Each structure stands twice: as C-alpha cells, then as structure tokens.
Image 1: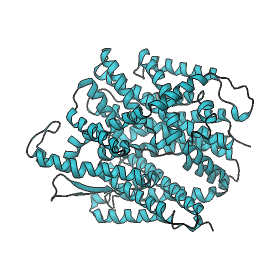
Image 2: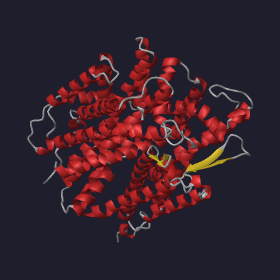
Image 3: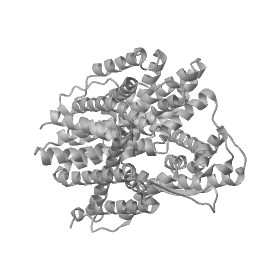
Image 4: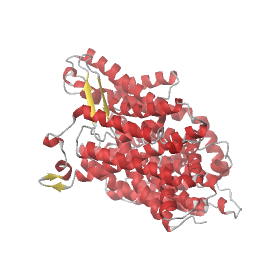
Length: 620
C-alpha cells in the first residue's frame, strides 16, 4: 500500500504551511491554538480519494503527520518570539532576522522529533490501552472511516470558505466592526463586548462549554469585579504603571495598565500549578524513558522500524553545535546545553501529558515559564544581563516551547500511525519535513503580521509572548508592578482551591472579555448538542464530529484571510495601502455594532446547519 509518496509529501507540506499560518494568527489573537491533525487528515482524504481517485489510509496518515507539524511549530514560535519584535519596537535590542527565526524554529522542531524517537516504544507501544492519546486515537478513527472522507472534507472546506468571506467583509471591507464594544457608564470601570469573528466561535465549540465557561468566568472577574474596584477606589490618583489619573483611563486604560498584570500573575501561576501537579507523572515517565533509552528493536517488522539511534544522537549533537556556533542564534555553549537538558526533559513530559489529557490541555506555556524563570535567574547570576541576557533567555524559551509542542504533536501522530499500521520511520521523516517547511514559513508570517498590526496591539495582543516578555523583564530588571502580579497569583490559588482548571480561567482574566464572550457562544452551541436527545449514540457522535470539522474550517479560514489582510495592509496602492483602499468604513459605509451582532448570529446558525441540522448525520 502506498505510504511515503510524492503526493503525500507535497500535500502535507502545503497543509503544514496553511495550518501553521492560520494557527499563528489565532494564537496571537487569543493565546490558544487548535490541533490540525484531524482537519489535515480529512482534507487529505477528500483530495486523495475524491480528486485523485486513490485509496490509501497510510498515505493519508503521512499527510496529516506532515500537515499537523505546522500547527505545533507555529504554537511554539508565537508563544515566545514576538517578544523579540516588541523589544525592538521599544528600542531595546534589534529585530530578529528571518534566518534567526527559522533556525530557532528548526532547532526546536527537530529536537522535539529526535527526542520522541527513543520514547516511542515505551510510551506509544508498551502503554497502548493505558495511555489513550485522545487526538491520535480520534484521528485514527477518522482515517479508518475513510469511505466518508468526501462528505467530511466538504464540512471543513465549507467552514473555510464561509469564514474567509466573513473575515474579508468584517476586517477587510469593514462593513461592520469585528469588535462590538459597550462601556457601562452606570457601573464605572466595567464594560462588555465581543469580537464577532468565526475563529472564536470555532474555538468555543471545539473546547466545549466547560472550558469556554471557565474563560468567561475569568473575563467577568476582570471586567465586572477587578476593574470596577480599581475605578471606585482609584479616583484621581496616578498609580504606576499608568501615567494618567485612573478616573481618566476608561475601561481599556484600566485593563491595559492594571488588569493585564493581574492576569499575567494568574496565567504564570496556573502554568506552574499544572506543572507541579504533574510532577509524579513526570518523574515516572522520565524514569521509564531512561530505562528504555537505547534499547534496540531486533524486529524487522515494518510497523516497528524507527530511525536509527545513531542518526538520532548525531542529529541532537549537530543541533547543539549549531545553536552554540551559529552567529544568528544568540546562545553560548552553556545555553545550548541548557536547551538539550530541558528539551529532553520537557519532551518526555509533553508526550505523557498529551497522552493523558490531550494536546489542548498540554501545559506548554507552564513549561516555558518554568524554563524562563530558571534560565533567566542563572543568566543574571552569571552576569549575562541587559539586552543580551533577555534575548538569550527568550531564545532558550523559544526552543524549549517548540520542543514541547512538537513532541506532543509527534506523539499523537505516532499513536495514529500505530493504530492504522503505519511505518514509524516514515512518519518520523515526515514530521521532520513538516518541521522544515513550517520553520521556513513561520519567519515570514511573523514579520508579515508584525508589519501589518504590530504585536501587543488590539488586533494582535500576543498574550503568551507578552507574558514571557514580562517574566524575563521582571527577573532581569525588577520593573514589574509586583503587587498586581501577586493579586493574580492569589486569584489563581483560590481557583485551584475551588478545584476549577486554573489556566482557562487565568487566560480569560488576562485577555479582554471581548474574546471570552464569542468563545462562550460557540461553547453554548456545543452544550446544546451535548444535552440534546438523539435517536442513537452514533447520530450524536456524527453531529458533534461534523461540528468539529466545520468549526476547524472556520478557524483555518479566518486565520488564512487574516494573513491575506496583513499582506493588504502593507501593499502600497492609490496613495495609501490596498487595505485602506478596500475599507468601506472610511467612506462612511458601516452597519455598526448592530450589524456585527446580526452577522455573528448568522454565523452561529451555520454551525447549527453543519452539525444538528445536517440530515447526513442521521443514523436510523
């Protein structure tokens, strides 16, 4: 049966770049990314089966293996590297070059794959049936249901097309504002609103009602508790870090000057709590991995063939030397050794974590924060301070973040391959191809998005990267408003005591409520479907799966058009830019906030159409 073919490689590379770009845009807006494995598998089946008239589950598996790598490289890169752009904008340090971004992403991605190869037998094979790897198992089920590939691919493409058109109308033509905002004057300091965009509704549906509600709870705490308190007690006081009286700041001024730091403390604490709770699992996994490391596999069975351990060790050594000696990577030998040590440790942790709780709940940010705290303190003690120390710290954090993200993705892909009978060695090579392709693309994507809107702006708040930047600056310079950070720490501890997941709540506290409300809208549709009575369980599963595929398309469609609009924003045209030329609101044509809410309600109805109201999902 065909497996590692030219078709699978080309299609996989295209999907790696597309899903990498879409997830980069999504993550920079809301601080979260979504798994690309299942959408990539479905699109692959639609193209290979319907268009090319071929049937090969193993070929489709290689496509999703290569394609999903783009999402993981993007996630690791956007959580950290925008900090370099923000420092450059502040006059601190220089803009990272495209070669620097590509090499950092490449080193982290390849290390993530190399570290997972000797762990495969212990974590994927020996613990099959014990560690579920939910996304990997689900992707295998989708591949095995290949005869439905055409219809399923149709749902993804429909979501992609509808979201692309919607995004173009909202943020390209500006027929209506994509951010609906209301300040509640009777309750000073509070406000409500929604970014009425497809990706946010899609995230809510995929994450489900519980995670969505935790995020909204964080937003309500910030915008209806903390901010009104600051407005009530602040009065005309000028309180650091703001430079104007609190009474003159308004809701957005209070949020950006104060609540952002409270949220940062909560997110950092949530990440570290996740890590601490995982310590017994970490120790066990690391010990088991060390026992199995280097164990040879004498079997000649195709399904048991991994890349040679000699290639793995040589690859790790080569990457360490490149990080040490390449002038565009600001690391010395000590920094390269730290990366290898923490990288293997957190690759092991990441693989086991995604095996138990899934990729979406993998505390990559917590691992990165822990790495940054330790390395920044070590660098400061060693006298490597100032700009060079901060850049070295974020570089180490970037590589570790990408290692953890790719290790988790590789684990899910290898589990899918194990279930469908793929060749591990070919999947591992495919994962590297996906890493290389997306590493080359991610630098251009980061530069493009920064040129169009700038990181830290309302369009691209880059929440995770801003947090990493604040952590490094806080350790190096001690210039953070620590009281506000510790308020966030206290809130996170209270949430943990109440036995709620801290990270979703903390992200909701950290981000504007305008992101939590549309996510909750998507979550409510999922809640309705979860509670609705169907004829049988098979119909219910079909409805939920169709909704997931359609909303995955929504996320991809918005992300891709977001990148296209970034191109429009920097192309000169008619005395301005192409983006300004197509802007209808500049000509006084706009449907206003009401128009935005009406369009968003229509978008939510399309989710219903492709899930609950889709007659193809009914099973008698």
